[in-house]
Image 1 (cartoon, helix red, strand yellow):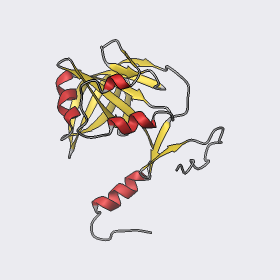
Image 2 (tube, helix red, strand yellow):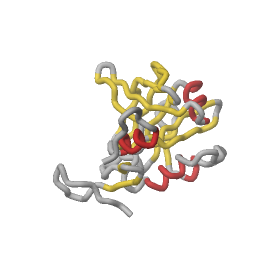
Image 3 (cartoon, helix red, strand yellow):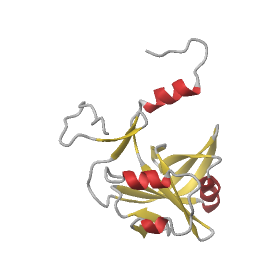
Image 4 (cartoon, one colour):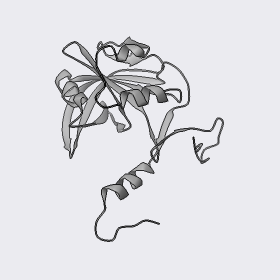
Length: 178
């Protein structure tokens, strides 16, 4: 068992936070006519009244300024077949030109790219931005929500992509993956 008596280090914090299994989404925005997209696992529902969600965006990411200036963003929650998309949109410094065209998508009500293979999608208008250290916490009012297909989610746990075991009863440990 690892523990820290005096101070929590970044490596211990990352290990602890990594024990919390999360889903994976690609968040998109359209700024000055250019599509931007970024993989996130820091996405959460916030409120039912009004309908609010949040996403945390690293301040040094190119996506950060784009989403703040656009004021609208889309969320495509990935199914277990979305690992390639997740990896692609997590790549720093990739070209923006034509990158999104490599992935099948449609335009939502707000004109945002939403992945055709997503298991759920949302479009949001930013209502607040809060400081979150090296990230901004972007809160958005939900404008549209769809369930395009029913499939198991892509899960991220302890630094690895995971798949839920088919037909596993609640409480069954996740597939350890490759």
